[in-house]
Image 1: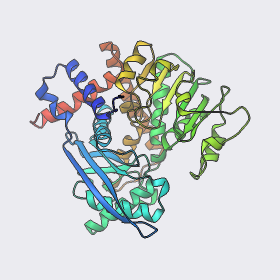
Image 2: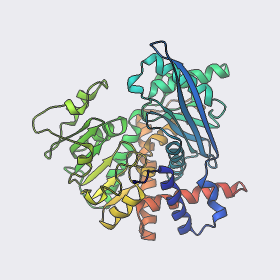
Image 3: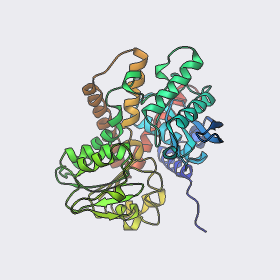
Image 4: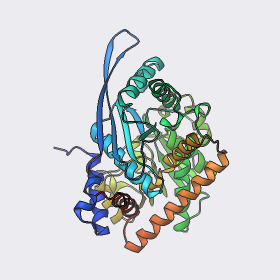
Length: 418
């Protein structure tokens, strides 16, 4: 029988490995293997047809040693407890590796937002916010958008929380609309951070940006913006995909045309047609011959079953947990360099941090300042991870965890706790 994939097991093994390399005793880092708080909630919602449906949701705070918990809220049918725990833990180490004063949190609701009306989603969001309200707040835990949620959902969360408090609390969530305390550049932040990471990687490897081939799995917010920004730089995007499948052209895709086709959220790539287009599956897309592969969909996409067939030179993880540890070992043995999620896709949480600071200080940043500050943080973090990986003769993933685990452990020790 095939063993079920548990993303939290991946987290535990990576933390153990990094802590061992750092020379920590079990008691010095054991708490990092357990979330600080876990809340499971149920939300009854009257649907448009008059029926009552009860949805299940979660909010997990992995660590607040370095600051308030920070992490998105995922609306997806596949949400489960272990996934949310893993995502919360990844957020702890993601915030630590880019050195912003946050811990890790994550939330999720088991639902299919594509099959729900706006009224139903609004009602569900409000019920969920009220249910997790004791755990969240600008100084405790700050949610943000994730798969299946967006700026509108964040506005509903902020509104519900503010009604409970009796006054507007802009800093309770990030990723809000600009008119409600959002920040310029947030929508593109994660994809822009992926672009900065790819630029840094190619520079280290003495490879040109212009004409370098790229495959992007997943054309949601992160994948579509990554593809758009890389295309603007002159990189050759040869394949992209969504939930319905992928499109491939070895001579390079018309990314602006594809983005225009997908705008509005009603069209699928399986129905997209243009000269030179070949339709392929997501599985086939991952195995294309390319220089850079950007998995920007969900977890467990590159695993023990397909890692031997991956033909890229570099994997840059724009999604959270797209590569299993088993696949990590296979890719490393085959000489494929991988930039881990906690570094590559940290742009979103960095600009969320800027938004939170902006809300607290009641200031407005220009988009130029946001992007400049983001680049500085992403470049600094990449350089630190690259350097320690070279010094320790290890992978970039291990290098990122060596930095992040050390920072979290030191924060706990500095407070006199283990």
